[in-house]
Image (cartoon, rainbow, N blue to C red; front, top):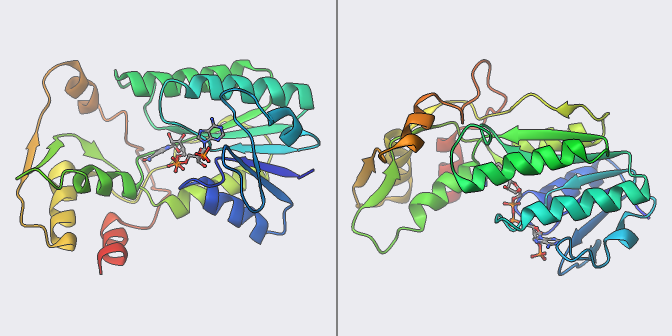
Length: 246
Ligand SMILES: NC(=O)c1ccc[n+]([C@@H]2O[C@H](COP(=O)([O-])OP(=O)(O)OC[C@H]3O[C@@H](n4cnc5c(N)ncnc54)[C@H](OP(=O)(O)O)[C@@H]3O)[C@@H](O)[C@H]2O)c1
């Protein structure tokens, strides 16, 4: 069996992460429900096939997600199986500020971190800011609206490729619990992000950037989703857009 197991190996992060580990000469097995070349079909929700996949595996890079509440069961099943198999290191991705933003989705990410840390399996958790692709998607999905809506909060998007580089570095290293947060090269207002997207996509629709009322905006005002200090990511949102929409 493989030295590294990458869960979610058909996903946006998992696919390039498995490829980057292989490019370093590592022995890598992917895992997703559908499986495929270089990947085993297993379901982290039911546990089906997971024990078998983890046999003799040294490190797991856990990137499988449904991005819903069931992800709590995914981490529970994964860490239980990792313990049974004697896995030496589980690396997982999380989101900057997830423990400080009062949204159910973020609370679940913070619980996933706690479950991993309490599992008894040596773990490394890498929190990252939102991906460039997520900000792009936030605007792009609104194609049937006459305006493009966005919350008046600040973001610091990062390139998936740079997140993958960091995850691979962590996976080949020793477990370290919570690693330092990483974010993109610049903090932007939603207005700036929308203006860049509007120009790159040649959209004519105006942005309607509003401050959602209540405790959510109050929480975002403190910038829990941003990473102060020198930026990890170098690739800008504008570069991402230029390449995607040229
Ligand atoms: N988007 C952002 O801005 C951002 C920022 C920070 C962190 N993250 C985190 O990054 C992680 C990866 O996201 P992504 O965009 O790469 O997700 P994605 O593209 O949706 O990929 C999800 C992967 O998980 C697999 N999967 C889903 N359910 C599974 C199950 N029950 N058992 C086994 N495999 C399963 C999927 O394959 P099958 O369907 O074949 O099972 C797929 O390979 C997520 O945890 C996300 O929260 C995202």
